[in-house]
Image 1 (cartoon, protein in one colour):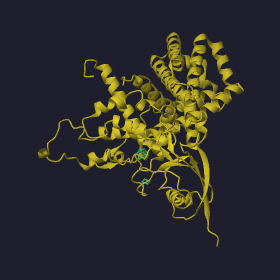
Image 2: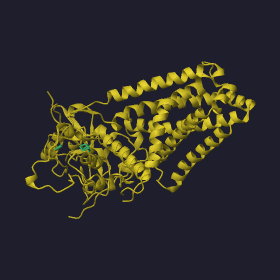
Image 3: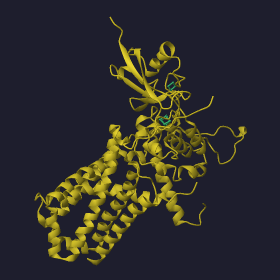
Image 4: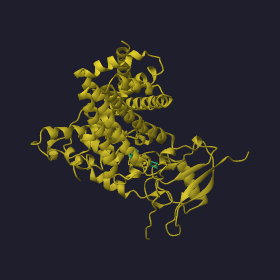
Length: 248
Length: 128
Length: 115
Ligand code: SF4
Ligand code: FES
């Protein structure tokens, strides 16, 4: 019996030699328990050692293997060949980000934005170790738990046309994480995060396309976080209008 | 090693590239019809304020084929707006009872229920 | 970053979106299709009936809301959609969209007050 194979078309870009990226086609063995990442590893190990891409965990945890597969952002360790076979598969680096090399995207922009929303608990008062644990009930935890699942894979940014159109847009994952800490009962940093989240480049660039939530492999639902932030920021705005002598 | 990051351009036709983007664009396009319909109501009220004959002419214009085509298209887009609006509503109002997060289904259903009641009410009033 | 004034237009957008999701389809159906096609009697929209309606102060407020909110909803969405289609965000597009909505709202108010 002849071995079943699958063709994969990969967008290559080698900055030393290439002016523009171009597709290169490889033929890989087809196995129904292989994911796209296995096919890439097969190419790297057996066909073309120059191919560059990021990965680490191979189990949808590290968030480093995101790429466009047939035009949709996916974790390559989470996308099975059997869902594409026997058709050719087209693999490109994450959309909306510059290409560093082959399938490696430049994600510095996201890192800066993530930092800007202060994604960590900012307590009202510094707590000493002697104060003991900062307790939280399961109900309080569940209010924001889904947003803690984010693995920073950036599929949501690759899916977001508003990020593509307006690169200054803070974007789905960072805004979802801002919301996550705002909802945390141990946190008192909302006002600091609102500086970014409620600015023009924050939630207001979002038009609720909703793709971020569609493609998120962790069901974080950034679109919901952004929508809720819009509503809360609007309430803030009217409150400030009615009470101009209040703080801010 | 020197870096040379490559920037890809987002094509203007990005919303045709994928089915979900296209339905997003259809949803957004509903605004053209909803806005135009608002203007049409203003026009109707203006004709009403002018008198019986003028208002009669307005009603007659509503029966013209272009008007019927416009309203048929407007109805389709208005329905796209309604359905998409309701389907996204749960995202704006997360519900949690105790520890349990509730699914969005009931919120969507409640919207449809209100919609049916409101539409039936308007139809009834119009018929009286 | 500057504090945003987007909440004004966004709240109108959201309010108008909510209102038109509930009422626009049935209104379009009645005035644009059912009555003109004879599925419903022409009396529904008759001059005398509509005049009584438009002269009622409460109905005036309802009519104004049904015109005003969806109009702003549409203007705001049109602005973002033009941007989606490749038009640069800027003062001109903003003035045109919101200006049109403002003009429409004023026209509606004037007509309703004069009936
Ligand atoms: S929100 Fe979801 S898609 Fe976006 S970075 Fe986090 S895990 Fe990835
Ligand atoms: S390799 Fe870690 S998420 Fe895919």
